[in-house]
Structure formats: C-alpha cells, structure tokens
Image (cartoon, rainbow, N blue to C red; front, side, top):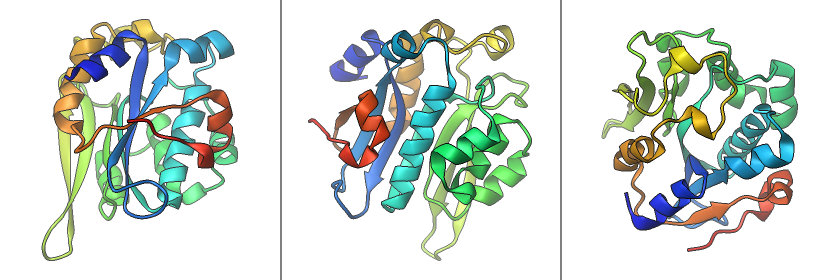
Length: 215
C-alpha cells in the first residue's frame, strides 16, 4: 500500500470503485473513487442507503460514458434499500438489476457469471452464501478469440469484516476491524497504472458530470 492510500484510509476514506475511461472526458488512466464514510454518516445519520446511491450513480455514470469500472471493498447484503429506490436512483433497470439481485441475495453464482460474462468488470463484494466467510468477486477476461471468461475470486478477509457477527448491524467504519489489512488485500488486485483521487462532495454526487480529478 502506498503512502497516499494509507493516508486516505487513516482519514476514514473507503475506496468504492475504480473507473477507467476508454474515451470521453476522463483520460485512459484509472480513477480511484474514495468516499469519506465518516462525513457521510455525520451529515446523513445512519442511512446506509445513501452510500448505495453513491455507488449506483458511479456505476451508471461510468457505463453511460463507456468506461470500464471496477468495484471494490463494499458489502452489499446488509444494505437497506428497496428495488424501487434503486431504480429511481439509476433510471436504468437493466444495468443495476444484477446489483439488486445481489443485495437481496436472490441470485446464484451461475447467474452472476452469466450477467457479467460480456462485461469488462471486476467486482468485489460480500456474498452471504459463501459459507467460508470470504469476499467473493469475479473477473471477466477477454481472450484473443473475442470470447469472455468469468473467473471467480475468493479472498479471505475475516480479519477485515466478520459477516456472521456483524450482519445485523449497520455498516459503519467500525464494521471493518482491520481496515489497513483490508485495503492492502485489494491494493494488490486493484493497483492502477496511474493514481487519481476523486473526493466526491454531496453537490458533486447530485451531478456526477461535475466530477473532477486531482493527481
């Protein structure tokens, strides 16, 4: 983990996504999206659905702009948000229906692979059906033949988040018991070619077109 990542973690930030633009206003560099969960909770109380709104808007923004997006370090199962709320946020049923399935724990690994097999997406999130308690992810790889392959990824992060113990609690900063270890795990996988940091304010979240990057 580099010093800047460590500082962001110590300041209460969580990396929730990595976006790489293939064209458009964002460069071909990867952009890491960090959100200060402490500030979110201070301003909005214990309404965890707000962080889902942030994440869905980031996804929708990235897909709309034909970007590759990587999601990381967020647990979906305990989130309290309805399908209707999610649709209102995203205004795009097709692109987020798979997320709702994960949130409501209604889809199988096979369905998950099928949904994502043609998308260049790396996804990491807590998956309650995984009895080992590890984080589940999938990476889609495009072969020279043009076909995609979905590869399951399991990472044991018991030191970072204890799903069975914390499943009935709202997700707060204290839910991740060893944040540095947690981000170090994902840092190995999510290491971008060039670092950009996006500090998203409440106003910017309302209008994602105004996202700005700072080196």
